[in-house]
Length: 309
Image (cartoon, rainbow, N blue to C red; front, side, top):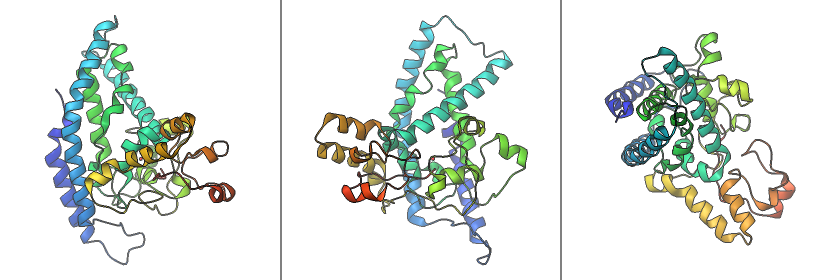
């Protein structure tokens, strides 16, 4: 089965090493100097990446079987020999990623998976490798593509090239690219915003390869003030197991403490900052501070939230 990400592992590691050396030679007196690397943080990111590859390789077999079943049921067929089929797949895959990414910031059950990628307080190429160990929700967001007649192998190829593209945008070394490129494509500047915990950067810039979806659907935010990376409440651990599962544990605790099933479901399917006391007055941008009166009335839910993925 095609997996360009596995084939690219040597390139990933070489790129991390090159960026690390380049950052070491930065002038300490330069304004907005990149944060750079921290040994424990980088080690955690690499361990998370290895774990993700192992787990996702197994889960990918389940996805392939499901997509093959859907593909066999539909009368539609997309011929890989036609160039326009690849063009449609490019946009369809990237839209699927946008929907996947947005849902994984807006629904806490999905956020428990995606929070792993946002848990680092650094932003470098190793951060791109910090991936989750519970990738099971991904199956839903590309399931419409075999229904359109795309063979599963084409779908997984598209998923791979999308992830490969996103590797290089996890860097502070590249500031801005030509304006036409910044307008159409996801760039390091756009994705730094996505990884920020500054209030104005929360839940912004979900695009994979293209940034046009964010411009179309009102989730685009340009880079302005310096980005603070990580979560609004950082987990302060380099333990890979805790990084992988801390939000699942927090959801379980909140559900156990809830007295009504409606609230238990809310902790699972509403936004990461939701609690019963804020159900009528949660800010539109999940992760923003709660009103002081409500914050004083009850404890906040056990959740770590980012500004921006």
